[in-house]
Amino acid sequence: MKTKENIKTKKEALTAQKNMAYLGLFNSIDHNKEGIIQPYQFWNELKSHGILVDDPRLKDINDNFKKEKLKNRKGITFELFSKCIDQSILLTKSLKGELVIPDFKSFTDEITTIYNKLEKNLSGSVANYIPQLARVNPDQFAVSICTIDGQRFDYGDFNTDFCLQSTCKPINYCIAHESLGESVVHKHIGREPSGRSFNEMALNNDGLPHNPLINSGAIMCSSLIERHAPISDRFDLVMKTWSELSGGFNPSFNNSVYLSEKQTADRNFALAYFMREKNAFPENTNLIETLEFYFQCCSIEVKSPSMASAAATLANGGVNPLTGKNVFNSSTVKNCLSLMNSCGMYDFSGEYAFKIGFPAKSGVSGAMMIVIPNVMGICVWSPNLDELGNSVRGVEFSKMFGERFNFHNYDSLINSNDKLDPRKSKYENKIDGVISLIYAASLGDIDEIKKLEARGIDLNSADYDGRTALHLAASEGHKEVVEYLINRNTTANLKDRWGGSPIEDAKRSNHRNIVKILEEYLSNQFKSENK
Ligand code: GLN
Image 1 (cartoon, rainbow, N blue to C red):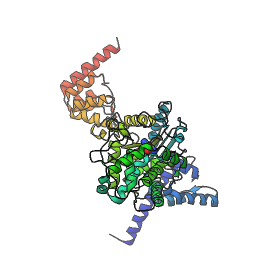
Image 2 (image 1 turned 90 degrees about the vertical axis):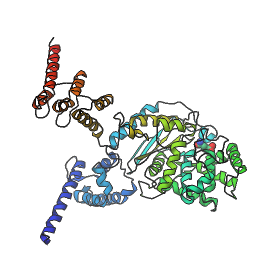
Image 3 (image 1 turned 180 degrees about the vertical axis):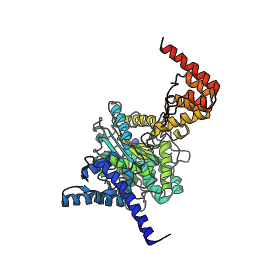
Image 4 (image 1 turned 135 degrees about the vertical axis):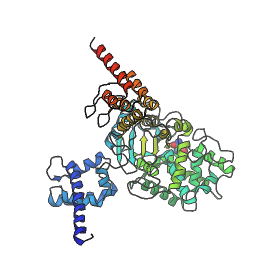
């Protein structure tokens, strides 16, 4: 019956339930059980989930804490804590480990390990076509990560500015695509990898640049961005876009890089004239202005956290995870990522797509933007380049990252346990393998058992109830599996949580042949142990 009383008690019950849950979260931060937590404890806890104190989504809460601390000098009471949690779904999700990378700490430990290994790699050399790049300290190395839930991690030289160089190309493509659409943009630019170096004097059979991610294509994109607006407004649009992509952090501009670029641009001028000769540009394109605009875009500077946030915006279908701002349409992003996947790494693109298998874009400043769609964006910055113009450590990072985590475009086909899936919670990767093994044993699927073994799953693994593959195979009467398992020297007398062993399972289910096999195996084992 829907009496007033009933509704009231139901409401009270729900509130009590919520309070219990909040109290659990509060207690997990209040380690000293003081009934009060300090803002730094709160932020440290969030940091372990990748949510940082300068997160624009938590600005109000941060301000509130500061005010409250000034007022009562004590810290965050349970009451204030509950009020904040009520305001922010992000807080609840982070504290409960429900963000896209639930075990962020283990994930970032893996990243740190990769970083530390790569730090020793000093091969390659900095770009030297302009003095401003030639003078950069080659040992610098930054890795930044931003997930689609805005979990962030920065390591190394993440406070140093570097210029975008070719990493401006995918973004300029998106800007042009956003206002003109796919068909207009691709009337002027192809979408095939060129297989040549980034500034090669080559156009496709239609006399157009092969794609927007090499110099000719990027010059073409520059001519398409807001082409009727004054050049200053066009540059402002690019800067504003980078600021939105960065989650509100403003990019800067390196004027000396720009001046140097302009002075050493014979090849880019030649490419532009070549394209003009082929009528590739829209009518009335001012070539010099277009080139200068392109050099200016290459000379924009950011830090690695900003570039990771930009990559995360692409990973998130065009919406910046930190601000919720919809920077690009998802159809624009889809096209951009397709191109980054096939053409983002100059003439290493095919190899990168084959071996590593996620979209990326490099630049001669040593910057690299990596996108793991629906998961995260990564920036690696390390100035030493290989012969193709890609950052040595950037490429190596991609390889090691791709070997550790299952983010190759087609890893989903392989169902492999060799690679980690950081989208899973702490023990899920391991548990999945064990459950598959036990399930395969219960069905008598010996091929699957062999595959799981090859992937490193211990054949003696037990589930929560202590049941092993041998228990299940014995109980279900799968002789072949039992034989296979004992041939692999599994332990035959492991007990489940009710104290039962595989042989008892076989007896109970009346599988006499299996009882015999196991008896023999156990007695042989006994003999050899007591020799
Ligand atoms: N400014 C460089 C150029 O146009 C950018 C090239 C690059 O990063 N590969 O030559």
